[in-house]
Length: 301
Image (cartoon, rainbow, N blue to C red; front, side):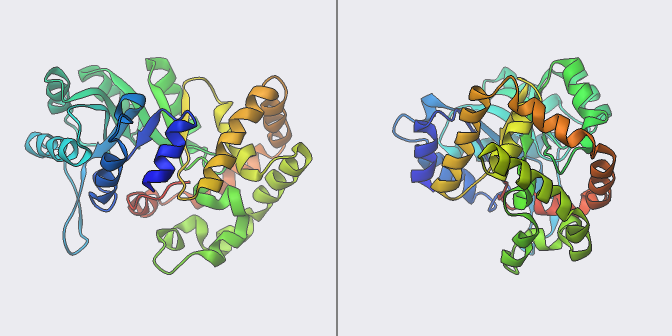
């Protein structure tokens, strides 16, 4: 994985995203090792806090000042850095004041929120400017467009889109479910249950058909769509394979080549299916509390 991170940085990737709950802690340690040898100076580093995992797997949401400070100090140590560029609150607590103090002390540069409602974003932004909000956004998950995206843009907050490939669905389609191990958290997500996968198979079929006509992969098409949502949007597809990373980067090349017509065509072709897409997505992602539990395992696509 360290070699893959170095390959990504050499290819021009400038943002590395992790969290203290991935592992827990092991992903930060891995990223910390990858940052050595001059890599740190080439990237912006983002990590998160807010979820504490007990030894028995029990999850606790924490945001009290003492925990915030301890979590930050722990991440700094594991990452081997003096300052975190973007520090997200992984699950939202009502207090942002301690984060403001960490900025003033130089331990973090900017504050971010992860999976926050529009009202929470406004409250937090009133205490201290929020730099970025991380949320799930893809052709398969578009509920955030109703009020969260407009709120971020009204306040001038950057948007970091995780799982831009629909947790792998927009790469492989329904057959993805058959390849998941029993330990893969996606097997328990509502959207990956047989009845929902079957109903939404047509979404992948349309994306796949359009990608074939354009001479690209479904993943590249899906990433092109997310990129086309605005210059304030930064998708963060995750991968463990160099081949998949290279395919993702190729989406940027295609956007540059066809920037005036290609992404617009995607939106126009899918516009006729807009009501059905929204209904299906609402059905599949309705139980966000259930899906959120899987978001902390460190795999995003």
